Length: 139
Image (tube, rainbow, N blue to C red; front, top):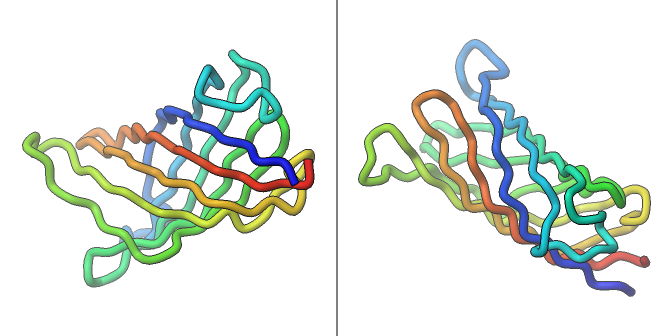
C-alpha cells in the first residue's frame, strides 16, 4: 500500500446549479508543485477540483466531488456538514470541509484517505481553496 500526499491551491468559480440556490457547483484548477508526491503527477501539471455543494436550510452544506490528478481521479465527500463563515471582509466568506476519499481511478484505483479543504468564496463567486490530502492506494 502506497501513501501519497498532496497540497494544492485551487482557483475557480462557484455557480448555482438550480433556481433555489440549494445546489452550487465548484469548478477549479491547480498546478502540481512541491507539495505533491510525484507519483500523483509531475510538477507543473494540472489538477482539477469539481464538486456539487448541497446547501441545507440550517446554513450548513455537504459536498461531493472529485479531484482529477494526472495519476487518476479521487472521489471525495464531506465527513459531516460544514458551514460558511463571515470574515472581517464583508465581501468574502470562508469555510472548511473535512472529506473522505471514497474511491479512485487510474493509478489511484481503490484509493481511500482524507482531504481537508479550506476555502474562500467572494462576492464575485470566485473560489480559492487549499486542499491537503492523504491518499492510500495500491500503487
